Length: 431
Image (tube, rainbow, N blue to C red; front, side):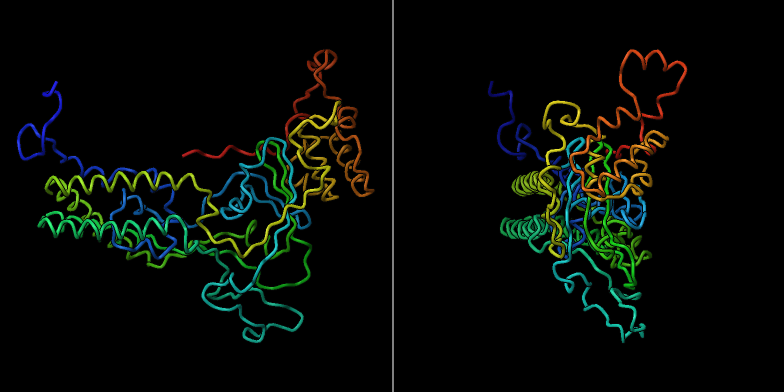
């Protein structure tokens, strides 16, 4: 039994060896890739430190905009339609939190306009010679509203903590006089700083430049699971969060990226070789540090994304009326009490009192029967008839029930168009 395991350190042939510890420096890509955007949006990404898989930050092509979530986002009054929900809007109200056939009404307003601008106050009308009957809300030049990372973001804390951990490892290497470990820690820390500098960026939102007379910016969002989210907001917020393009402003010019990436990759390869030649004590300490950091970055992926970004510039309020809450649950006996796409769609029409956006986003089948039902729904919504039997009326007008009679007539009449929405939302790609 004693011969089944190594004994002692690598000072003898039968001792423990940690030469493979250099691999710990380049594994953990999935955890770092999960946080790459939030991690490199803060200046802490340039701190010299050990970090799992720093090569993940060196992408062959930099992102031009942030990730999006597939959905149908349409302006209720202006008719603007986009096929996806922007990154920060999905953090403010995650679509994954909406259950199948769920319904919610939110009101979003600006908390304090001054914190929306990147490093300066919003320009005045006189600065740009704007006519008196127009009001400027943005500068066609440099200033744009932004969403900065939280100062005490878990990733910022991890970056500072890993920097202090690296300093501790350097002190230990100096105490035990391991020059190889000192050089290895120095090169891999410098490589991490270069990777961070090459990827350092700031997210900018698209402002609305002129405030002329426009309809309200209210937004309707339909998910793939048949849920609806109504957002009450002004045109500025609609442009920033839903219909504008979220830009990625990088602090390093594109031509410098190749130089930084090449030098960083060279330093990373040198450090991997050096880590395999440190003494046993330093290999054990560095290996334990990488295991700890990998675990912490994995744990950070379990934290909600709103903890990483400072969205305090927006105030969000749930104003869903009581008779529209719990749309995904059984509320009473009969057709009207069962959760269904038709009932949730009626809740959305009842709230907006319009059906133009329903047709625009393809929420209902494009047939004459559904068109008649939509007109009745709009009429009852305008009249304030909140107890209208929407599902029963849909059954009477559309007449598509799973009955024997339908089975008999299906061979002669195509009923598929009565079931499927005019526009199907594609599933999100899982990477």
